[in-house]
Amino acid sequence: MSIETIIASLNPSALFAAFVEGFWAPPYGPLKWAMWIVGISVALLPIMWIRDRIALNDVKKAWLSWPTLDQYRQTYPHAATRRGIRCYHCHSGFIANRSFSRTTLRIVSCKACNNILYRIW
Image (cartoon, rainbow, N blue to C red; front, side):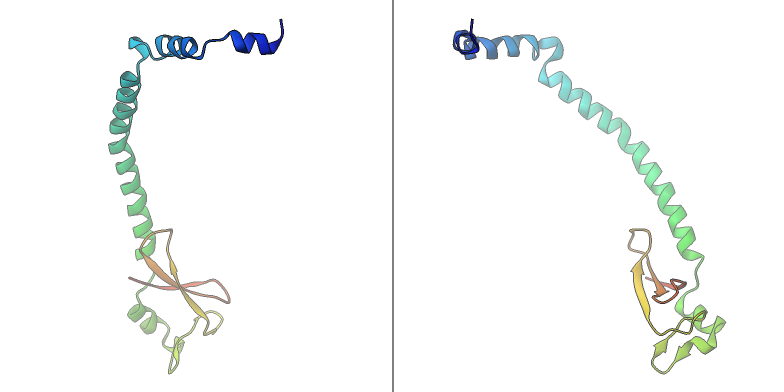
């Protein structure tokens, strides 16, 4: 028997009916699968929210450890020039305003030596 005769003898509607009756039958129906997915998602949401809050608090604590612009100017008075702020370490004027840890918190760092200078909103 060739593959063409086997394929021709298969009835697509009978195959679909067998699929629906076998896989999507009431004990394993789509509603049951959907309810499991929704139930697991709802159960995991508070856990994920708490984990994200803890991680965000750690990120904010690290961000708060750097000085503000005013504190930076008081600590390093030689870093304030007429043209702006420069790095206290390498005295470079090339500074970058960057996002801290993929959040809305911002830091200013030196482009030359990659030192973090101060934090901003």
